[in-house]
Image 1 (spheres, rainbow, N blue to C red):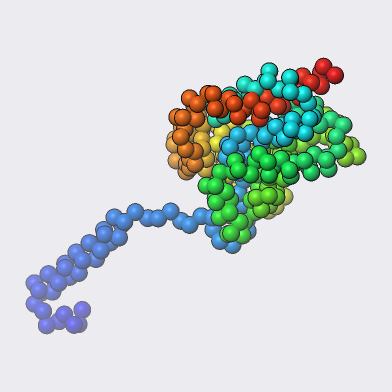
Image 2 (image 1 turned 90 degrees about the horizontal axis):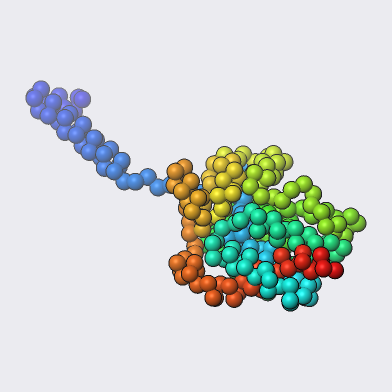
Length: 300
C-alpha cells in the first residue's frame, strides 16, 4: 500500500474498490466458461481398465448367431431346419435388444452342435467366420473408444454371454487384451455339451468383472464399462465410468437418471425397425442357425 500513500483516503478507497471489482469480474468470467470434462481415459493409469459388452455394443447383432451362420455354411446342420427358426435373429435385429429366453435357446443349441467337436477345430473355424461375417459389423465408434484405452496403456476386455472361444477370437482380431465369456465344458480338448456354471449374462457379468479386477489389482472406481443393454446395469454400476452405447430404451432411461454418458453409433434407426423384409432376409440365415442346430440334433 506504500505506493498508494500519496492518494487521499477517498482516492485510496476508490482504487481498492476498483481492484476488488476487477478481480471479481475476472473470477466470474472464468467461472462462466464451462469446465471441460477431465480427459479420459487417463494416460498411464495401470489400475484402470475397460470392459466392453459385445453384442450390439462392439458389434452389430449377436456374435452367436453370426457364428451359427458360419457353421451352417460348413454344413454342420441342414437347410430345412434353418428356415423354421429364422425369426430369432430377425427379432434381435429389429428390436435391437437382448431377450434372455431367445439367447438361452441359442446357447443351448450351440452346445448341442459343438458336442463331440474339438475346441481347436472350433477356434480355427471361428477365425474364418470372423472374417466372413463379423469384421464388417464392428461399430467404428466403439472400436475407437476401445483403442483410446489401449493407447492410454490400459487393458481392454470383452465381457459377453457368447462362448468364450468366440469372444477370444474377436478380442484378438481387434487387438484387445482378452475376453470373458460363457465357458463350455471340455474334456481332453473335446466339448461335452455342458456349461461350466451358467451363461455369463446380467449379474454374472458383474461378478466376472469383479473377480478379474481383484486378480489384476484394478481399482473399479477408475475403470470404465460399456454396454447397450439394461441387462448389464449391474456391470455398469460397478465402475466409475459407465457408458451406455447404442442403448435399449430401459438402459437409456436409467443412464439419463444416473447421469451416465451415452453414445449412439447407429444410423437409420427408424428404417431399421420398420425394414422387416430386408432385416428378415439377412436374419433368416444368421438368426435361425442356432435354434435349428438343436432340432437337427434331436432328430438324429
